[in-house]
Length: 250
Image (tube, rainbow, N blue to C red):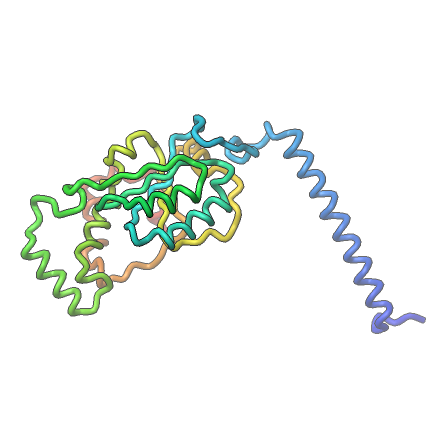
């Protein structure tokens, strides 16, 4: 008489389970492969197996927008390698590099060598990397010092504020960006650890999505003490700008 506690019986039961699971997965994999190869027209357009060649027209006017300095080329090459390996070697969307100073030839050569896609290099206008005319610079200087003394992250960093202002919308006014409808912000030092097998730009265009992000983080309240009150005041003044489907409940 065999007992369930017998090592031999346990081994046989485990083997039966593994064989059954393999058969189930194999059948589903074959079916999925046949569906993709023979019935790709049934897939959503953004998920169809496609490959765009460098320079050829694409279904979406989109690019990677990269704000970087000349000294960032090493960490930026790492970011570009991951982006190319995980996504862009198939889609070949162009890169737009922007800097408040002229890019060096070293930077251009080192970044251009990382992709087969088109690359564009531009300099940010002085009026987009400075203070608006209505800003009291003496008061701004005092506030930076106060925040720096209080240990606020980037509290005394003037260039960081110029960057935030530029990234808040001025970047889309740059002449190099006028040819694009969508952008994907790429930064030095970021990582992409998973393959991206679909076209996010096409996904957003088909669904009329204006903005997307991969992660939301908590703000440090001492860096934006008036932000939430200002947002609520704006919402109260302009309720017509709040989409019907929103996340206010959250």
